[in-house]
Image (cartoon, rainbow, N blue to C red):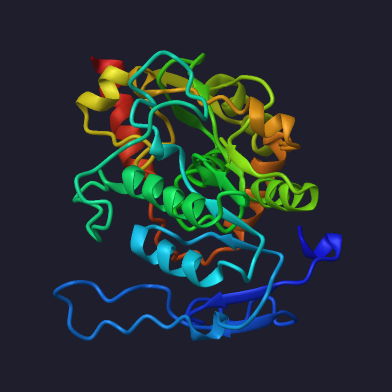
Length: 322
């Protein structure tokens, strides 16, 4: 998105994963991560490649621990004007627990040790640590912090495979287990729309905090699935199975099936993001492009999320026999 608008980029990373991406750009190698307590052999933190340079802005997509964000932010003070930090809706502890919509002024998560490197067995500290990372950026760049809070980031090349379950399943056709109530709300953001929004904010010189999540209007689960049917495979039919049954049968939200039970399904207001220029492509485009990418994957690929066809059939039989 930035290259399309004529911007220049320097990429800073370890060079271990997909090092051949964007070969035309400047690549700096280093290590933002601090050695972990009690883990001998962890590589030393190395930010030397960033020293003595100047950029208009930094976009931080990989900050998860407070101290590591503090280290980078402290080094870049005086070297960059604005710091864009990709945070998370998980900073809101009441999301999904409160009927009231979440906005950027809603209370934020906390934990006992803001500098811990322990996310918790179920990532229960993830949201609090993202919040403290935000605080570190805001402290270092009080006039130049841009804090973006997306929820599920989806689209082609999504490494979590959680959203990708749906285009893959719809391509297969037949009777589809449709979770929860048809009117349950969905919120997510296409990674390309998130990237465009980052560039939009940088071009406009906008700073502040934004819930970076779709859509410009409300999207229900039924609308989502029928859009997928119309876009990918008209042979699908939907059997709606309620939340209580799925939870009773140990179906994990998003990990086994891309859905959130109604009692956990919060709404985050994106009014500030839309006012600042966020735009969202049609869901049909995200589904179609993700399906095209999924088709290109090796046939023996092990998908990290989503239930098997056998598990789905088993649940549908039990649902009819209940």
